[in-house]
Amino acid sequence: MKKLLLIFGFGVLTMPLMAQLSQAERDFAINYLETTHANIVEAVKDLPEESFNYKPKDGGWSVSNALEHILLTETAFFGMAQGTLANDETMSEKDLSAQDGALIGMLANRGTKVKTAPPFEPSGKWSSKAEMLAELEKSRTKLVEFLSSTDADLRGHITTIPVGEVDVYQILLIVAAHSQRHTFQMQEVLAEMNAM
Image (cartoon, rainbow, N blue to C red):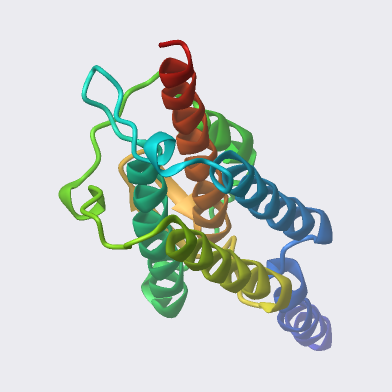
């Protein structure tokens, strides 16, 4: 009986340690969020208004539209992450960590076209590029601060999104991968405009 209690006690004491992200995972996600943020800023900050608002001939989004879409979805993804963490019913012992790389590759890839849901369609919510970049700065700072300080079990809470099951850590990776995807889109739009 003493052995059973000892094993159970050890399991309870080590459970929070096992649930925490590794420092490598935490560092990777923070770096990915910061790098994709810097790439967006670099692509957008010096654009004249004409370039920022140029729409491709095929009727796609302007750089401004893509940036607004990033902002709208980023807020929703972080809300989803927080909601998933707050719901005890989302706890799972599944280990989805092997899917991190594939998930990033799939989300960042511009080869597969995806129609966005109406709430994430750009509608002119922000009035200027400066306002949008300030909002992005605020959003990324909040995400990085959350990742830097949380001791929540980001791997142990799982939800289902259109691409399948993901844990909360992966939702945060999706934020970065999704913005990388749309930074590529911005570069395509600008390349088309510059080729004219």
